[in-house]
Amino acid sequence: MRQPVTDLRVKILSALSDPTRLEIVEFLGKEERCVCEIVPAFGRSQSTISKHLSILHEAGILARRTDGKRTLYKMKNQNIFDLLKAVDSLALDQIYELKRAEKMLMDTVR
Image (cartoon, rainbow, N blue to C red):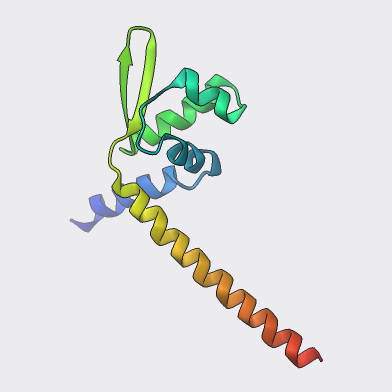
């Protein structure tokens, strides 16, 4: 029974593992935006951005709707930002440990 939960975790975390997709998530924030607004913000081709949006949508991170010819995306669940804050905290802890190790190393060299 744990396998489906693990699979979903992998799908979500994999979708977030790309720098462009992380930037898209941050760009969307609490707003709904048209692909026509997202593409220029990243300076990449529409097909590339559309692929990233599709991956985020398939992972359940983004909601998608059409309005005439426009396709709009928004965050499906704002809890993603809590996850990103937790990851940021882990990254800061690692940076702190590296800085501490660097200082210790420099102190022993002197």
